[in-house]
Image (cartoon, rainbow, N blue to C red):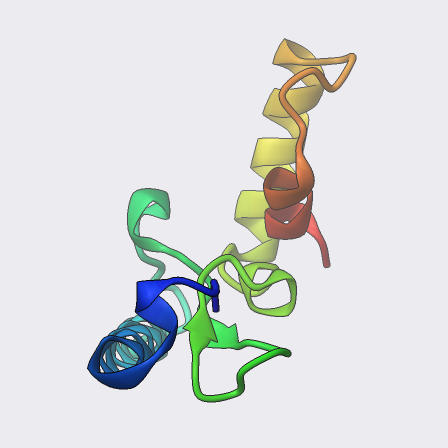
Length: 100
């Protein structure tokens, strides 16, 4: 967590509860059916933070790589290769989403 007003007291507790709630929601959504995946704008890859296990951080590298199905990853890789062959738009998050 950041060392500001959001890192102590009631605000810290609220941030922890908020992040845990959305982590649980995302996992429940994905558990409905193996074919079910949230829209990418709704998928955040929440997982416990290494610095604060009570805070579920979004875009956790280990969690993000499980959001997309293998066939969806293959389609995205193909499209990226076609539209962005030099990798201009490939960043850490995109790489994590496509990781096996």
